[in-house]
Length: 134
Image 1 (tube, rainbow, N blue to C red):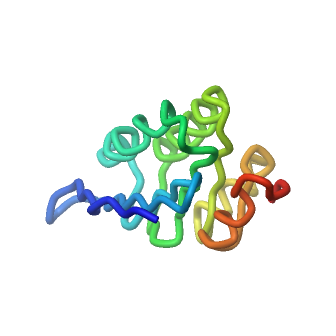
Image 2: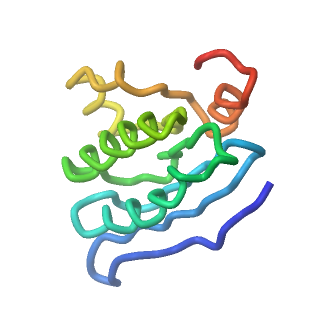
């Protein structure tokens, strides 16, 4: 298991986002804390883009437990991450989905597009090679 130091983006006045990466065997968990919106989406993209080409990863879990807010730009980034991850032959799971993000995904029907688990640990178990679909 390896951990990468968190990266923070934002200002004292505006939205901020912290992204932490923790590898569990062949599954990378991307922990988000803060707000995922237009000014912070570039940090998410910058953090996950290198993961798509990594042959040692079978899956990427985006953990939204610490996410306070997610706007339409953030939703678009999640959809783009899902598509890019799948195109790279990897599974993409969401965990810890709650609040407005959960309501938005349910209202739009997008919850059916994602594999969603209650927790990052459950997502890691579901995504580990040899495990069945979540």
